[in-house]
Image (tube, rainbow, N blue to C red; front, side):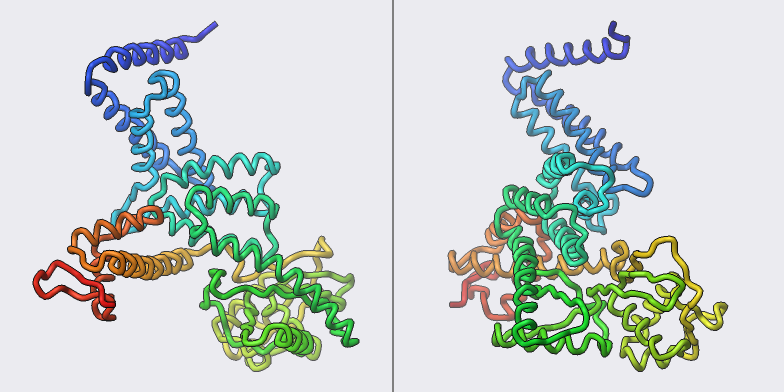
Length: 467
């Protein structure tokens, strides 16, 4: 038995089908229907997106848009016989919704939300999703990705989140990670995913390098006294910001390991310079001074502070600063995280952390779990500041991309009018992002200053390539 609502829906679809068949036989008559459908899909999509509230907006955003896309794809297939003009209307409507800006002055949030959605699926803590479910959801996410104009923004967010997953060993499955990168490569080409592939290569090379380092230690009868492993990452491939880097004096317990690895690496690779990113390192520390032993995973900075308590039960802020050589900002953050975990206690808990503050080791500490992890400061969720830094980085990358495109075009064409050059640059860039005309003009001026191109003497709006 069919209820009234379902019967009414079927009747409307039947009426639409009859209208389509009637208009199809008349030249250009279906255009009004196509336009009406496009506006209707756009309205439905914007309503779905604007209604989003709550904690998990990335998931709601992607799933709401996929629901709209699937609903109207099915309608076009059944009612309009899969007519390509109606499919085109669906594509235009979806593109309009996905690239819609609530505020014209701000960048569209869709690339960021889609990257966060993929990150939530690929992390180890993905909620009760099997590998097949994750695979299907990632495949569906490519539907949204294809409509995004600012694909370079998605790439930047995705690569930063991938870097965190790989560095902190948070990936649910390396196969799923690789499958997603291959999906992006099919959608955008190898150039788009080349850095992502290099990140994967670094992970596998580092595994092999650790094995060879262990063999080096055995061959030379060197005992480090600790378990020590490293990841060697190519600076050009990994989107690791320099903002969190602070001066740091590595603990005495790590000095031998670092020196031996540097010695081993220099004998294998001449001319390469190693820069230690201590703010991205993790350490596992065994606490043996309490009623029962605990194994705690923490950041290297947190470990360096706790190791100072091997020689004293109470330390002043100045003493910790002197021994770790951390910046004031970084040290305050690390001490705050240790206070929150209650592993150390402030002698005056009422006062904020200041230069004359003192901190004691909490010898009465207890925890239900014997093995746990402290939240590292740099591993917290992406802050608004990081989002802004990502957008600034995207702008810089775009300027370089546009300048390279202008030089390529001018080298091939030798002489071009201004408007023609602008159009050719837009055509080259559109698969990655929709360039702003004012940005292209600034890039042209920059290249004139650098003497890559020049204005021709006879026409002020014409440029020639400087060989």
